[in-house]
Length: 404
Ligand code: FEO
Image (cartoon, rainbow, N blue to C red; front, side):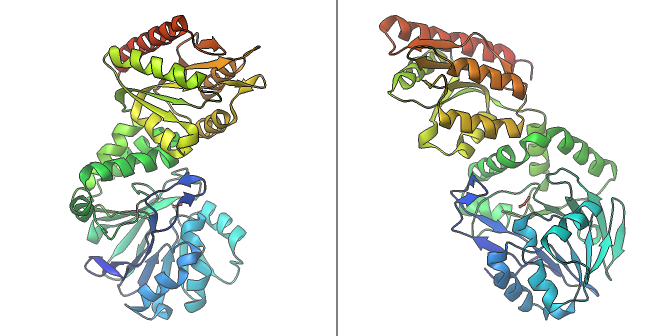
């Protein structure tokens, strides 16, 4: 896709990755984009680069506007590989450009490249850089979502260049929110935002709230937010800020998601009866089998729902491996404000349900105990127990949800 003017003199010069389906383990069925931006001012300034596979694409986009040798400044808002690995290719074309980056970013950059020959300028929150008709304001956002992360605000354009924050993994010919809603739908955009937040930003809710409060306190007027992935928020930037605040405050739907795996369908049969009990209690319920879905889909659905039940058969005195894999992924994302429980079948000693509750304790999730275990195969009586287990869990979720 060619360069696109997003504000007078400000251009998207990034790349669309239509084919990527595995983004460092995060399944991306819709692909993604790597957004970077070129500001044509007295000092031509580039914001971030792209994943190295697309180095030529972004350089061609820059070249369609200006000789890259004329770039004077490169702002590195974030040093993760998908944004920084083309930096050396760009610097080879304009070796005297100054790089503006946080101190943590400078240290990290030195692990990727030999930076001794580069003119590195370390910046911190509140520092400014005049590039002609515009002044850039740097805002450190450490751990949103890496230690080096920062955003840059351009007052004259009321533009926040926000690196990963407010992004989505979605390859589309739409570059703006209003275009995306026309080509796809508003619901699909919200789903993409929630998917990205759940899989990337879930651990950082408190930081998100404090950083948005800091930006509001600074009184920055923002009429466009340009992230490093997905669409640019030009029609309704307030929408994405509000969505982030809601998600950071633990917003969820009154719904239970059952996430399970199964060996000989006993745990699967249990999940069916539990699902019926939840539904008959008037609570929406969704069922996700782990071997039929990527972890990132299960995480998104867990994040959207107030309650979650994890089901696993016992294999060799422990939980089923796919369930263990999912719980490791979940633990890193540190979910909050969700009520959980566990169930599963076993043959002799059991162990899966106990292990799952142990993981809940480590994560710090509030759990409904005891869980439910069934020997070998659910009998008619066991199916009734599963149904009642589902009804009781749904009642507890309704009561828990009322706090929010
Ligand atoms: Fe899109 Fe944290 O990289």
